[in-house]
Length: 339
Ligand SMILES: [Zn+2]
Image (tube, rainbow, N blue to C red):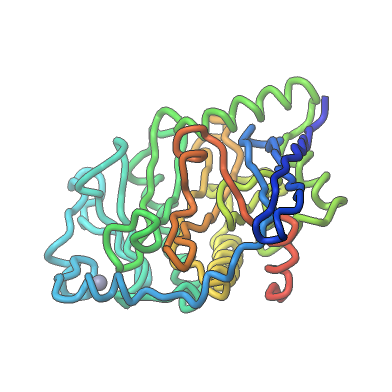
C-alpha cells in the first residue's frame, strides 16, 4: 500500500449568537500524516494576525543578568569538554562556540552558541552563522560521540519555546538509542521499504512534487514543504531528496541548508512568530535507518490574551490543533521565497 494522505471531515452545528441564533455548520478536519503517523486537526477558523514580533517582555526580564554566552563571559563561564574528547576544551568555528550542556538530557548533549550578538531577530541570522552551527554539530558528532547512531540538532528560540537564555544557541543530542519520534520514523520507513521496495521519503516527495499544494521549494541539498499533518500552527519541514543525512552533506550543501533555514525563520518573523523550536533528525551511521528530517515549528501566544498554541489536545491527546491549513501556509511562504 503506497503512502496514504488520510483526511476525515466531521460536521458539527450550533445556533450562532453572532448570526441571530441561526443554525451554523462547522467543519473539523482530521489528518493522518503519512510519514510520522501524527494526527492534526485543521480548524479553518480565521487566525487573527499575531501582530508584530515583540521580544520586549523577555528583554526586560533579561536586564541585569550576566549572560554566560556573551563574548568575554563565554571563555570563563561555560563548561568545557573533557580533555580526551576535545583537548582544546571549547569547539570554535566562526562566531560559534561549543561546550557540554551542564544539565544534559542525553549522554552527549552540547550547547552551540551561534552568534556574538546577545539578541538576534530571526531575520538577522546569516546563512554563515547557522551553517557554522551545523558544521560544528557535525564536528562534535565525529569527535565526541563516535559510537552514537542517532542525532539531532535542536533549537529553542526564545522563552515561549523553552529557551533558557536570550543568546541564540543550538542544542545537539546524540545517542545509541533513537528518541521516541525518531524510532517511530525509523519503524515506518523500514516497514514502507519492506512493503513497497522503495524509500518512504522519496515516495512522499514524489507525491508532493506532483500535488504542489504544500511544496515550497528546493534550496541546497533539501526540499522545503509544509507537512500534510503539521505539529504546530506554523510547521516547515525539510527533507533530503537524495536520501543523504547531515553527516554526508558537503560544507557547501550545509550552507545551502542554512540559507533555507534563514528564509523560513524570516518568514516566521514576518508573521509575528516570537518563538520557535527546531529539530534536525539524522543518522550518524548508514545502518541506523533514520531518514533526514528537519522541522521548524512555531510556539506562539495568540493575542490578545497571549493564549498558548499548545492546549490539552496536544499535551494530553498527542494531536495538534492548527488554525491555518498547510496549503494556506505554503501559499503564503511562497510569496516571500526567492529562488
Ligand atoms: Zn549574551
